[in-house]
Image (cartoon, rainbow, N blue to C red):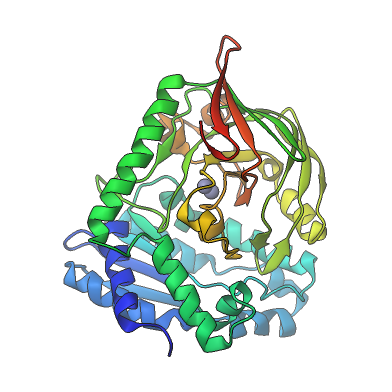
Length: 409
Ligand code: ZN
Ligand code: ZN
């Protein structure tokens, strides 16, 4: 084991105390790959130290996932364990918090039939709704944190041997998570305040649209009616203030699902469901992607866009400066939790209801009327770089520089 146990313990503590802000007596549901067991054990210990009720980990395993793809009957691929997600949903209804540990091997399913991967992903997304809705709706406090598995580490550091790569990825996660140097709780409070300032400025400007220009990109992205910019700490509907993502560098809001026009190119590869999609180019018309190509993984991209009605429209727009520590590390993590915090991005699919005024109380129809998108997917992809300029367009047509060459203007 090349992972420093003290660093691991600190990451676990920050995830529980700052990320979740787990409350006295609150139950906790954790999902994690078996490979992340050392981190799960530390998280469970810190959860009980923080006064947790019952902590329940639910494990997955790469080998077991592959065993299904390689051996199951065809009819298996349209099934998902709905009972499990209903149970998780029930736990959240009763007040449990949610922790997800990400350690995916980004290429796990690269050798599998994209059609089968798409079917499994669709069946799982539909079945997972009872477990996902309380999370997307911020009804419970939740947190996502990462653990460096050897397979993932070697993708990020292909020139290092397995042990060295794992240690290096741990250091990178640690640095990106703003845990180094001083008290991590204070670091996070200061970082959150900076994000809050940008959120307040964007909310005061109340732009009608954003206009992106750069290589292969000329995109006018309308913002939803009554959109609200968010970033940093989140106040959950259960009254708990928490940090959903560790790390986080983004401020984000709800785009208008029917007012996006023009072309946009991805600036980083997207690791999705064990496949890599790279060199994405799409054209939007009235909010819908009408033309999509990719240098790599085009088939997977097409399947993704065809998932349902809302899968070819966007539900999130996020701004991240090129100077963020993750971007400056120069690393490609092949993991959305990190890569989405290295660059401005948009997300295909479901919007976050709380990025629209009164969103939590609106019916799906009312949400749609304001421009909020609905889908069973939510997939972020990176469109920002140091070559992208963004203007805010006011309701009167006035233009205000928001970002120049990837930095806040
Ligand atoms: Zn985002
Ligand atoms: Zn997102």
